[in-house]
Image 1 (cartoon, helix red, strand yellow):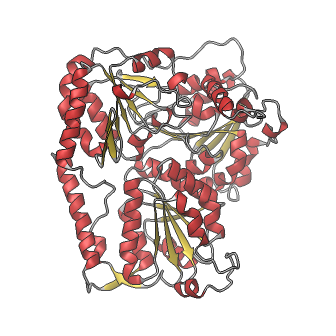
Image 2 (cartoon, helix red, strand yellow):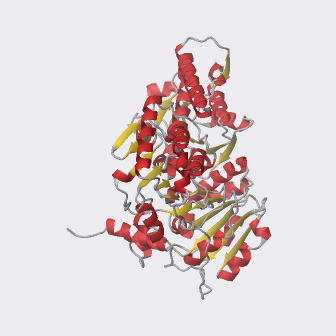
Image 3 (tube, rainbow, N blue to C red):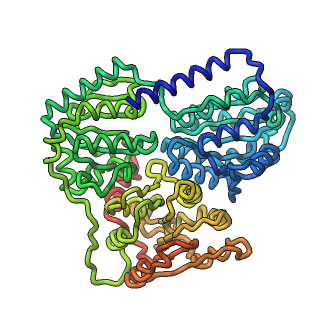
Length: 596
């Protein structure tokens, strides 16, 4: 099979890299370490690098600025840069997001964004410009240090939030360390930390290893073990008489398994549902797609179809509280099979190192004859429905279904933590669209920085429209990142949901407390304020009722997104999607403040 040949080729490349590292090669010393790193990134399709300049990374930034294909995107702060690298990586499968900061002050500012990428399994490489190798040994009282000689304190601080750390202290190890760092990042789909001392950037090394490509694929599954696992799954499906439903989740997206899952579903015709984090992992226009399953928060018809099936196959599941209806899945282990990136669980048995991406094509071939049975299993219709409301006020109940008629195929849709993440769930999204959200980490303001990275990546892959939904409270945290969006010539449509405060916090606790209020900015002035000497064409609108919003959405000039646009949407402060209200109630009970 083609998949087997690809896996074998990848493994041979890994072995060649290992052998090359062990052998004393005498290749021509014709590339600097900094250039080697940039070449590796370019080979993987990286075209944008995020971050800020600082005196320990300036020499490296000279190389970045002069690179023919890797573009430097200067951010307004390091946290936003980390968010942008996260968003970039989510759109371009098989590659990674890259952020470059300076030692200490810069890297610590980015750490929240790096932690979020770790939690949500996003491949982000954090390149940190650090003092020279000599200074690391002598430890003088340098600026950006704590003044106590602990030069390693920052790498210790970041260690829980990265999958691997690479420190280039010898030029003889530089190429292998860079290759290891990038490989760990893209295969594990987690952030990696790479330090680049000032005196290493321009050291020259052999370019020989660059002829051997790096691969995002896991090592091949053990053939005999994989065959046994497939037999086990086949037997369970047979016992279930083909009454199987599939739930797709975040790791289908994170580990680049959309195609394998699509082929599996087409061949078997099993009904499929998604979790909130798995939305757009499969085509939502398919008649075999039934909508969102989120435990006790699920639509009753969907809940019954999923939980009554004889067998449930979860692919890439990530059972966080907001992704599982506060851990309310009603799926017994004896009726459950889980396919993950690095292991498979069949009922109570766990098979390590049997990954879904390589196994799915073989499992598809084995189960495709169940198509005749599965195609007759009923699936609830997941279609656009615009509710009728007599009031002209823009409510969440009406707003999100109305947006469903605005979306187009291949849209990139970015939603912020809170009302947007929950409101979008029951809206069918067009074929080829990608939903970008951060449901597990849930750092408010993340969506704005992420939108910058997602828009740059979308431009690379030919996805023309990027649409951001962000609350007024969240936008105030990261609003500066609208500036590099404008300067980069990006054209996102930004819907600012103005409900005068932190809605999800209101519903969890303190509905009428002042700490959940914010200052009401002049939102329609933002793009002009953050424009670069008004060099770029931008436009802003305010809509206060349903008719104004519908007229704007139906305007072809607006919808074609020929320039960056911001829409302030006036909503009631205490209005929220039903799913958010119910989730907040569960969260509030779990966080109950009671005296003992």
